[in-house]
Amino acid sequence: MNSAPEGLPFAGPTRFDFENMEVLLNRQSRRLTRLLLAILLLSFSAAALSFIYKMNHPPTATPAAQTPAPLAPMVSDEPASPVGPATQPARDAAPPVWPPPSIDASGHAVEAAARLSRPATEPSALDSSLLARAQAKADAGRFLEARAELNDALQSPDLDASQTDSIKAMLNQISQTVIFGHRRFADDAYGGVYVVQPGDSLARIAMAHDCTWELLSRINGIEPRHLRAGASIKIIDGPFFAVVEKHKFAMDIYLGGLPGEKSAMFITSYPVGLGRDDSTPVGTWIVEPHRKLKHPTYYSPRGEGVIAADDPKNPLGGYWIGLTGTDGQAVGKISYGIHGTIDPDSIGKQSSMGCIRLRPDDIAVVFDMMVEGKSLVVVKE
Image (cartoon, rainbow, N blue to C red):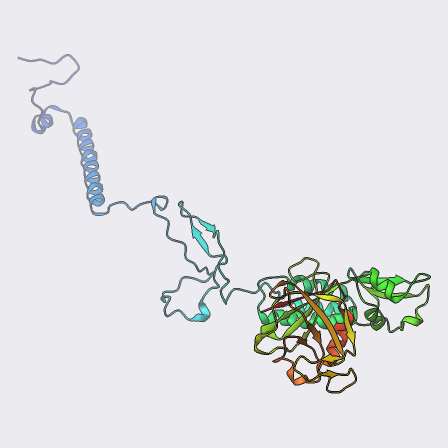
């Protein structure tokens, strides 16, 4: 017969079952046992419910593990619209990103290596207030500042034809004061003020500044014989250059260099007439020394004989600027020049035998600007 040590309950049979435990354990032990069993049952139930939930709801990938979505070529601060691209109203469309992004191997946007032509909706490089600022400066007498700002903007390759014409039109207005007017601008980088020295002549002063005495006479309103030592006169640092664009029938005048050169300053523009059947050769010409003539006699290559300078039938219109070809199709060409016309309706047309025609008032000014042996004339398609 088994017996328990003193102070301990009888252990009873060695097999574990609830029925014998209820018999052998005291009331306090039974309460503790029931509590433990309840905890075990709750834990088991919770584990079972968690397992069932995970089986029915597989975990989703974290944002860091997701594949980056391709970057869209459009950006907008507006909320995403449920309307598809094909039906999205145009007024809701966001402006395109420029330059268009490309995607590298890591999925990040990088600037495109090669730039495409700007789309029609790309904002212009021309500030919408540029002309207004320039006009305000000109109205305040700050002509040189206005001219510099406009000419810098003119160098932009992103201007369209309309914007280019607007800038040139305002530069032409400024040139009427800064270049062709009598007002002097001591700080002008393309001219200034000169104090006449004893023994000076307009021809000598003009030669030192790569311009013509005729231009100095025009802009100072002074005859050469009236020049006096100690007087201050307005000067222009030349030479002037001309660029003829055949498809526009236009001659642009520049000072200090040709377009594309940093020193080039646009001055003004004139309409021209050109050679019949596209016979005006493209290329570079130089104003031929000793071939600028006022009231030239015309020796007709058409068998009309010689037409005197004062004959109203003389087609040269009172001026002749002889040209010598130095580059392009102009090389080796002779007997070409810039002259006036007695037929104003031929301006803007192909009517001459290959020469460049100007209106009577325009040829008079161009004649005064062009410097023999230095002024270049570039003819482009």
